[in-house]
Length: 268
Image (cartoon, rainbow, N blue to C red):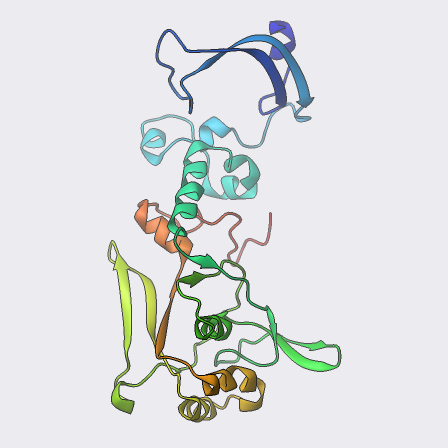
């Protein structure tokens, strides 16, 4: 059996059959303090490469370990072979922490195709949808407000959004254009949240949309909801990856992003 195991490439998937027992001495580098007295091993899926492009052990090492002379892995290499990189214990911990951050909120899924621009600016991806003009949602902002007006509270959504410069639909303090009911939240000196009280008066909302040269007709279903009765409310956008990055004192926003995208990276 030992001879069989030695010829298996690292990261091959195996089924192990044996007896679970408590170790005589504390185990190091394991998630569970148990050992398996192996009786049989079956190879489920063998790694076909003689050598992996990224070693999980190397990818697991911290900057301090690398500076101390231990072998490590470059960030670009780790992102290129992200599936292997995600097998490391630090990455597994990062995304478990990210899952805990969301506890206490209701996850919603908003439409990604809408009739008109949800925010100002020119960065709108337009398309033809069954003969009608449509565009990709720049933000879930409008439908989040609809959900809030439907008596949902503490909601969040994770997914691709296409951001552009935000329209100013913040509620001006006493309708003074010089002030608004807005706020920012910081962790470790970095901004993680920007929020404000939103306009719940349909006439004022129409006025602000026209001032930003937004076609009010494309927002009619959104504006009309405030005619059905809507309490004053606010919203904020918190970048989940940014929150986890700063909470864990990580040095790069790509680390808490499962498969990050940047100007040079479109895969994997």
